[in-house]
Length: 499
Image 1 (tube, one colour):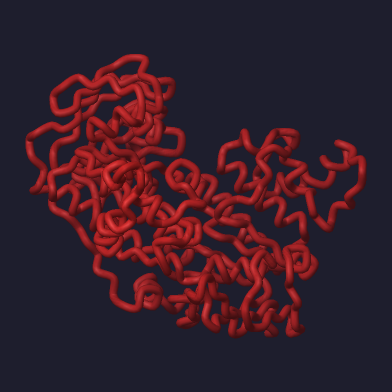
Image 2 (spheres, one colour):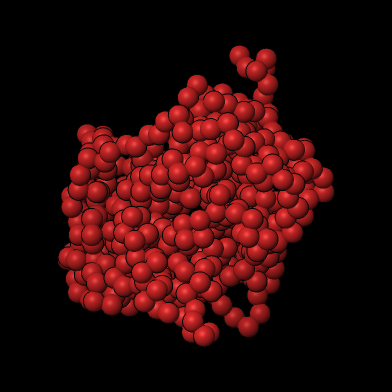
């Protein structure tokens, strides 16, 4: 069978550092092909080159055996290649329909476009992906899960033979994930080939036919999914057997760092719990359960309607993030790019910005002192960066997360709220972050860990609090809990309801 797409010896450097070094990828018609590797391995760079949004320094691309000249996204679209980025490239101020047809070669552009023509063109593709909302809805006002569906509908509308998907389920809830995987199976039956970039091994083994492994910008090998294992792929990704770290609950003391009673906000209702010194309290719940809103309330971002917060036994009325930081509360937000990092600023500046006053003399920042403070943290986090002076946006997702985490390690709060800190990063970076969590707990810090992955919560937490529709529906000892019991609580089932 002739390959539908073949990329050979693709190289790309940024600032003298190889993002790709003679990497290769082959794709068969009707194949779902996983592209896996640690953050910074070159996965996103490779699919951006295939999509025409980045240019390789060297190498060749072939479509059905013929050389393909791809200089921009329109060239890629003409060849039947479409991409869905992890950071969705939709226009927030345009409608759903406008986002689908703009620069779409299958929709004739003109000075005037009728609503009827937009409806006739867009609706079939939106229905195919399960979006049943208004075509006139403004994209920026829609939840991320619906935006993911719109981006997929746009790719389908381009009659793409190849669809490149970069972490397509990172923003989807359980039912959205199942709908997407079902749609991918239908596309495969129709002969559409899909490059599936993901860190989620369960999805890869559920949907993919083959996997290409990248490490440090190079193609390490290709595996048939039916004859390999997650452990084999992970070993190829990281170049070693990955040591799974677990932690003991023995470091938890009786001292209460944080006590929350009857906490009520616009989203939360009568939430109560405690966090002890040395404890990791996991927070579970479905999308919209109020997990992130709990962090916002503790950090002074959301106003309290009722309830009481006590920090080290003293009543604490938090009215701003600055006040929370002064009292020893930290928050690593769920969306690092929008809520956490300053993308144009350097890696160094993002790490030290919250403590920059400590490093000033006569109003001038002492760069040597900055480097001295943050360099050991970056080393401890196994952070990979060509230079601390480059913009933080140039780093991979996992290394961006480590830069954000380093900021809070410099601040050194007594209580740290971590909102899905390992979302969308590779297994190696996850283990580095898990180790940091364990070390902070061992030092007597209190940690609140939100995660969408139940195995992560069970491995990292001492206890797990479950939220559903803004209310506490369960509290479990992590050593005794099961994924089934936590999920039952997350959907509002009581113990007597379970069959």
